[in-house]
Image (tube, rainbow, N blue to C red; front, top):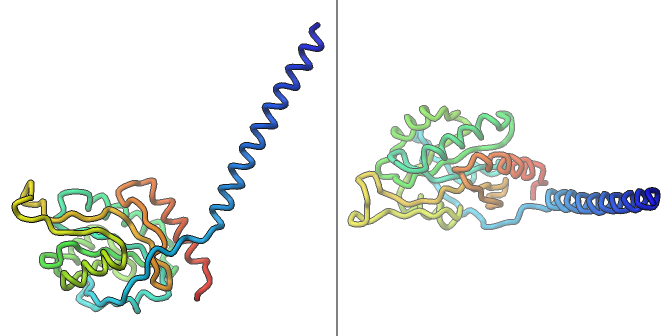
Length: 212
């Protein structure tokens, strides 16, 4: 009686092992196929002309041929901006300095965030001058780029709706990835540390794409 029972157990466990192997094989095959799929094109960034923290003009043409990560913050922000800026700084540290990659932070508060204010903010954040730029300009121009080009929400809170003196703007906490042709190819939560590896993977994917 023991031998048949033992044989049945071996068959059962062998079958379970085979099923698990098939499941894991299908899972990893799906992951591999997903990794090979190109990132979708979500939007095309329109031409723009804004001013960086050094008072220099920055246009879409200046970023052509580069992969860039963009977000929108403001220096007086009492909310998520500090966490987003820290995350952007960690991305800067993780990215190779010799690659065609740039980091772009727009300000939701261009009337207060002058180039001088942004320069001091960038220095406190450890921003490398040639890799991470903070952009300001006319409010209409900044907001047009954020909302129409980068798909980042931003709006000023009305005075009678503010819960505190620093409650000035509501804005997206996303980090947007733009390819070398100026097309938005992905967005990730800029407040989550887990987003860093996903952003780095997206950047590597875009750097490998052939120029069109």
